[in-house]
Amino acid sequence: MATIAPSRRVRRTPFTPGVEAAGVTGYTVYNHMLLPARFASPEEDYHHLKRHVQVWDVACERQVQITGPDARRLMDLISPRDLDKMAADQCFYIPVIGRDGGMLNDPVALQPRPGVWWISVADGDYWQYVLGVADAIGLDVDVSEPDVSPLGVQGPKADDLMVRVFGETIRDLRFFRHVTLPFDGHDLVIARSGYSKQGGFEIYVDDSAMGMPLWAALIAAGEDLGVRAGCPNLIERVEGGLLSYGNDMTRENTPFEAGLARFVNSPLDYIGKTALASRPAKRMIRAVTIEGEIPACDRLWQVFSDGRVVGQVTSAVWSPDFQTNVAIGMLEASHWDAGARIEVGTQDGMRHALVRDRFWI
Image (cartoon, rainbow, N blue to C red; front, side, top):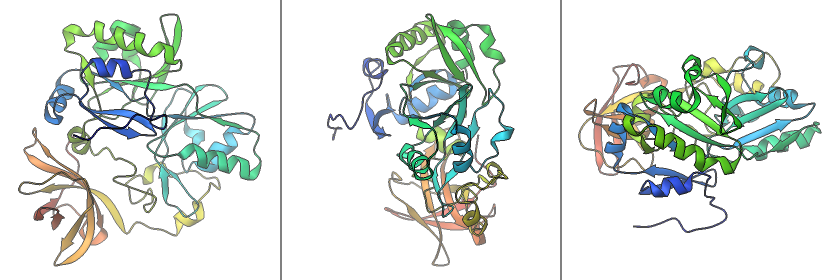
């Protein structure tokens, strides 16, 4: 089996020792960092995530930190979402675009403290774009990547585990809100968020030296809850319709095509606003079920109707719980309505498929 060659360009994380001790069996690379991709099998990891609780090394969710007198002005320039509607303790999903209206990333923005912005980015060197905007117009800001490494706690027993480490007040934390709580004499920002539909938290560890003590505390506290190391799971992600930037949508797509129009509401003149207004959605993200056996979806699969290409499938996998192949597709307007019959061209041949009205969880 091929392995990832060690390199300073592919960084370990503060939690890598815990991941290795837990028996990680597969990695991918995300934002130039190791991201665990498998511990047991994809199906076993999936069942455990949906029934118990897992601790995830998601340090690869790097933060673009913006500080300085013009920090808010810079945020308004790069965000198509109205930041005036963002509460001080809120996490804001902001699909960011370039001057042509195409998506550059789909990060989460938050303010860990007044005057400090964190943009928690998906895979891609978005910090370079932010720095370029700031330098091009001479804004009085500092753009940096701080020593902040998120640690995820995901699964239906996540609240029970977090209470044991951070106290009962954690149960009161609302979805996509954050709070600062102490651990071992250090204050940590904790958000009720995460890259699964099972519920959970992300802990923003802002000192690498705290990584393994926190990891060890969570694993020890959850022994009777069946806690184990885990990672984002493809099956659960596709079931929940959680999009992957660079996979399900790219710079070729607008937020409208990715089904994210509700996050485009800024009244200000942000970068790409005029271009975006001239690009109505001609295709859209949709849930799809595919018949028969399918191979690994490690490439784009074209979608056909009457011999004509009408879209593409970007992610697809067998769902044990729903007993069908679940998929995410980007389909033209003529075929994006629920019930539309389509064909998907996999590397193993054509498969019949059906457009659904929603994702599964």
